[in-house]
Structures are given as structure tokens and as C-alpha cells.
Length: 376
Ligand SMILES: Cc1cc2nc3c(=O)[nH]c(=O)nc-3n(C[C@H](O)[C@H](O)[C@H](O)COP(=O)(O)O)c2cc1C
Image (cartoon, rainbow, N blue to C red; front, side):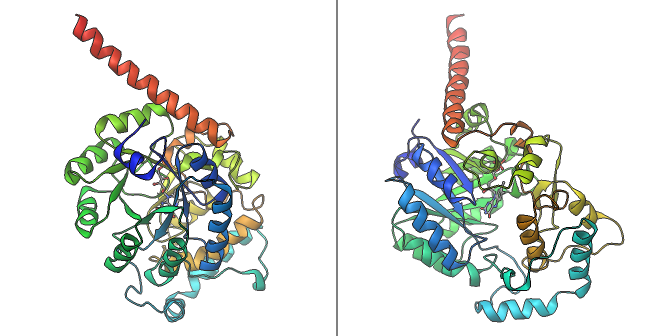
């Protein structure tokens, strides 16, 4: 199942898997797909540890790293991370911090000791993502860097290209895709609104052909709502060079997702997600729960912009990770509408195998239709 991108990257199947979990990255790449590690939650030192682990466990297979440098955010232009964090902290209303504490106290989610608290400003800015790029480029098996929420800055694109890697960027509209192409991005990932995480408001079925036509000879990977080989076949039939998936990997055996959170995903239906700004400040698709409802309710504080909202909520993310049972109804559960089909925990290699065989069946079904017409 070869496309130009698959050949260029030396992978067997054009199935890209975004995940925050190193075990999933290694398992996908070893199974013939292309694992991509989301770096946003890691400090540069932690990222180095994760990539060293992947290098050891991925064999000779290639993999990718995903960073987040948004096209627009509060404090943009400030490249000193410490100063940026201090400036942004001073702008956060105390009322927001109190509101977060109240939601968690109402649900009896315990505090995290002060000395264990994570850094509030993580990789949502050029200042914090820059060092992550340096770390990623020191690992030869990293063959692609992807950026979310905007076109990567020119110096970042140049640096990645100079090291012989490919640059990809996500988009949710054809206009953004053209901006990426004009900036020199090699691969555009078009994510329809169905997808998990930050997402626009145009559905995949409408978005993909719009982006493919706008891009001309720049390749596009299709994202948003892909959980079966039939959906993959549809994307390839439209002209995508591969599929970029995310939600699917939250319920695999290798995923480092606590049992209570995993159960929320396994139980959810395709109508149980919502696009909410309540965790990061930008619209992000996640499971609807008491937390997302609280930020929508009249009279309550409204989410701040990126990255300030995450600075307010980072402690809640951490409390959710540490106490997943208590935080069940106020947990950050980013996931797409395909969650309705994620009903069973399976190993990565079975997910890839099923997707490929389902995609082949769908192609044969289409071919069969063509042959019937030819015979008639
Ligand atoms: C839990 C989760 C976290 C995500 N975080 C990021 C991120 O940090 N960077 C990014 O480029 N995309 C992120 N995404 C989006 C994925 O890269 C991908 O485009 C999306 O999941 C595709 O749609 P699907 O969820 O329907 O497969 C995230 C998706 C999920 C489910």
C-alpha cells in the first residue's frame, strides 16, 4: 500500500499515528505505520528521555515528533520563556484559578503537593517549542516534525529542512493549507471537525477535497474521524497520500491511559464529544463532562486565550492524572467522534492489520462496481 509519502519515509502503510505515549509510537512504527510523539506536555529534558527510549525500542523504523507553535497566542513574539511565563502569570485573573479549585473541590479531587506541581507554561509557544525542536533533531530516526495550530516560523522550517527532515503542519481550512504550502511546509495534514484535540468547524468529507485541490502537488494527509479502513479508503480515493489518526490510539493495549479514563473512552458514543475552549483556550474536541459544562454555564468565568487558559488548568490536568478515579467527571479527555467505535482494547498491531485489510476490502468493493459496469 504505497503512496509517494510512504515511499519517501520508508514505511509499509501510509498510516500516521499521533500519540503522547512512547510505547504507541514504537509499536506503530514497528507494525509498518508511522508513530508520531506529541511533545507538547514534555520539558526538553523529558522529551530527550522519551526519544532515547523510542530509539531503543523502534528498531530501524522511522518516527516523527509533533510540536505546537500556534499562529496566534498571548505574548507572541517574546522568546524568553521565563519572562513570558512571568508576564502571562501576572495577567491571569485570580477568579479563574479559584473557579478551577472550586470545580475540583466539588468533585473531591485531591491536591497535588506544591513540590510536585508541573511547570505551567509548556510547549504552546515558540519560546518553549524551540528547545523541543533542538532535542528532536538530535535523534536520527526522527524523520518528520509536525506543527499544530499554525504555520511553523520560517527559521524553524529552515532548521528542520537543513537537517534533512520533512516538515508537516495541521490545518482545518483550505486557506491555512495554502499558507503552509507557501511557507515551504512539505506535507499538510487536513483535520476535519470530527477529530480529537484542537479542531476547526468543517467536516472531513468537505475539507479534504477542498484542501487537496488547493494544494496542487503538495501532499495531504487526511485526519479527523478515521477509525476504519473504509474511512481510510475514502480518504485515499479522494487523493490523500495517507491518513493521520489520533483518537484510535487512546484505547490500545500499549497506551499509557489510566483505567478510569480508558473506561470513559470505551463507554462513550459518537455524540458524547464537544468542542470546548475550557482546557487550552482554543476549540478542542473532547468528551463532554461536568468540567466542560461548568465553563459553559452562565455566570461562570469564560476561558482565557492560549496559553493562559492552560496555565490556569495545568494543575487540574495533573490532578486528573494523579487521581483519575476521583477526577472521572472533570478529566481532560481529548478525543474525536470516532470514540463511538472505540469499544475494545486491542494491541497496536491488530488495529493496523484490521485497518489495512478493511481498506483493501473497500477498494476491492469499488473495483467490483467498476467491473460490473464494464461488463454491463
Ligand atoms: C488526545 C489527543 C491529543 C492531541 N494533541 C495534539 C497535539 O498536541 N498536537 C497535534 O498536532 N495534534 C493533536 N491532536 C490531534 C491529532 O494529531 C489528530 O489530528 C487527530 O486526532 C485526528 O483525528 P481523530 O482523533 O479523529 O483520529 C490530538 C488528538 C488527540 C485525540
